[in-house]
Image: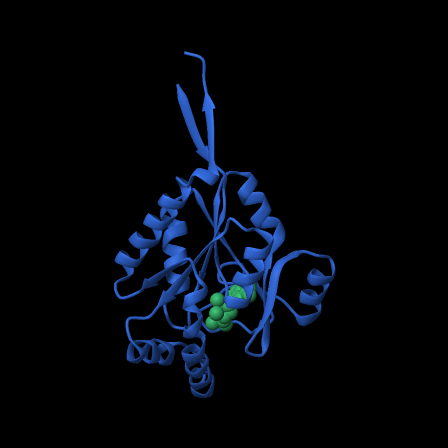
Length: 201
Ligand code: 5GP
């Protein structure tokens, strides 16, 4: 009998603020135990509806710098005024446990992860329209000033889609989830990831 397995990999999800990428990542990770959602560290203050350990690990600038110094970040970047980083240990542990790791990080982070883990898959999420993006950003529990800044940044950020392996338009959440799952399923079947074993019959 021929048995098939695949080398586990990271799925990087990026997109402009308000494109719905965090919801997509969570939905996929919650639906399937095979996935691990990487929770990032940030020095930014939590928003009203966010909690520590679920949305981010909210840490001080000193703690963040210490983690960087000790080489505990797989990647990190400055986004807006704050630092964001992917803690290394949970990612390595999950890959070793046979999980596919999903991370919601920006373009800078994607480039760094791809350099370290070349077999990672990068997916860019676009909103259905600019109007919808604006609406979603304004709906967030954030100050008006921040919302405006984020919208301006989001428009600039959208140019990065060309650097990704796949692009999804998040018009209907269930459809977008399905499309991402389809990508991951196809990626699992790539010859380069394939581990074939033959068992005596
Ligand atoms: P927000 O403050 O809206 O939660 O996130 C701002 C931006 O930071 C988003 O584009 C998000 O993808 C990015 N981000 C979140 N975590 C990380 C991370 O660990 N590393 C990098 N490079 N970017 C991150």
